[in-house]
Amino acid sequence: MTETDATRARPALALTRADAGGETLWLVRRGNEYSRLGMSLSQLLCLSPMAARQAVEEAAEGGASPDRVLAPIDPQQEVWAAGVTYLRSRDGRIEEASDGTPYDRVYGAERPELFFKSTGVRTRGPDETIGVRVDSEWNVPEPELGIVLHSSGALFGYVPGNDASSRSIEGENLLYLPQAKVFTAACALGPEIVPAWVAETPFAIGLEIRRDGALVFEGASSTDQMARGLDELADWLFRGLDFPDGVILLTGTGIVPEADFTLRAGDEVTVDIDGIGRLTNVASRVGRQGRK
Image 1 (cartoon, one colour):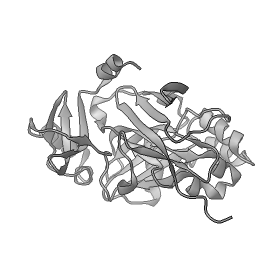
Image 2 (tube, one colour):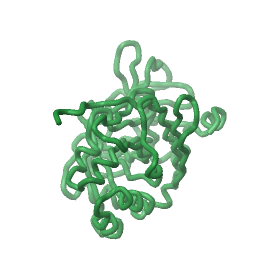
Image 3 (cartoon, rainbow, N blue to C red):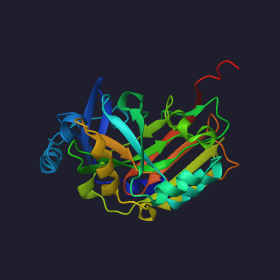
């Protein structure tokens, strides 16, 4: 996507968490103008959907300017994720696994795969690093639409996300899923949250990976290829847990690089969701090899 296309696709209304004059603030962006929301995202998501929309739309215009855009999540909030929601994801998991049968079954099952991904304080924002485990030889980014949910489970908005993963660790044994998915800098979100009432589904999703300035991988998908609905995923997540501060749920990926590709330190990864935003991070090695 060219810079002109990216500018044209920028949503008219969005929520931004930013460092502004030494303060960490939640801002409402209308066009190129920012205003203070006057509360945290956690507080906003405790309101009813109608009251939250009113709070966003009535935020006083002007009077704020972000110095640095941060990950759009409060420190105490959580990020969860859904797996195998696209056919390509199912096929990719089968390719990597010593036994792919569970992935085939969960793709068509009534109950989806849901797993914990990150806390707010561990989540990376735009232009920050995304992790590549040093004890994994096969690592990939996973571009995903994140849905921002009220404490009631109702949909508030959308955000681009990167669910960085170790395919070699997950493929070795399904019980290793937490290690394959949860590690330093394994989750990135941003740059903004776009309220659901100003966005139109479905969303085209793109992934670009550049190495030393050259494009080494490019892929595209769309949320209309999902095997499950967004409301369905949210419903299952809230069946077993309460989220008094709201929650962000990554909804799975339809873009899986081929088996001969692995992410390297220094690679620039861009997740592009049409009408929602572009999230760019640079890969960095994390963790340690440990004792042999």
